[in-house]
Image (cartoon, rainbow, N blue to C red):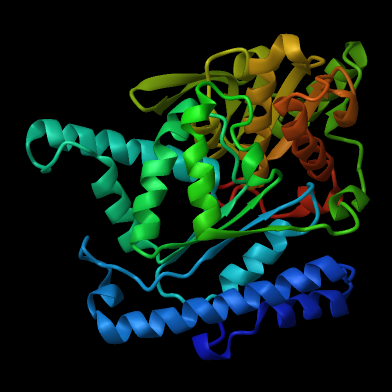
Length: 389
């Protein structure tokens, strides 16, 4: 049974409990962030009470004119594996807000693009007044969530970059509090993206509405997990191919697998070899075709195990492929999908891109690939999005 809202433990108390159980080691930077998140939770709770007294409409969240008491949010960035997501999850559990939402940023933006498309269609059909779909969409989101928590705030898509300023300006005007984790500081967002100058005002807007904190914890806790050595095979060659074949046969009972088609946004994503719950792809199938984060999330919602073969060395000559691989790993990791992979090198040697933005982002991918090989990850329940293993 869950605890009553008023009895919910603070972030600091939950953190201390994890330390006492031996699940994590105490880190001064994490402790400081836990205290800051507790203060933010108190600020949101106080503002929520004030809003309820002044506007009963907030309770029901149905009127687009609703305005919440403004609370400045938090943008926490730092190297991969330092505990950002863990602490944000503890904060989300603690925050005493009826209307709150925690999601991966890619998933949120994919959903938002769908909402904007639907709003445009409604405007054309004459069922929605005005000529700008951003306002109604922001009003919907603000009515649904007084608090928005984003994991892995990263901007790589020009379509997302061009709407972020207008969308979040409306959300903040409505009093939506935003808490986000990221591997990069705000001024590195959309670092070498197309028409980045048009994106820069959003960075200023973010700084005005969110406190920016760097989490400088001492170690990547994920790298300490045990590697069972059965789902990642390198280098490429007959041995790696045979190992992947053996796992496929063991999981499928020797089935060949059939071509499947995943319907998504009016098109079809081909799955070359598929049995219920398990899909098998080559790197070319998933990362050399024009697929994006939303496509990978759709696939992750259908399978509990993916097999990915022949991942090559990545670098500046395969920039688009590298970005897709980064998004693919994010989608699989966030949905706790098992990944069996054959690659040209171990994760830390897979990308050779100097100081490019892809090289920066790939550090997160290395950490996640390492965790996805661990006994803890493989033993965890798969695919919380709904697919039954």
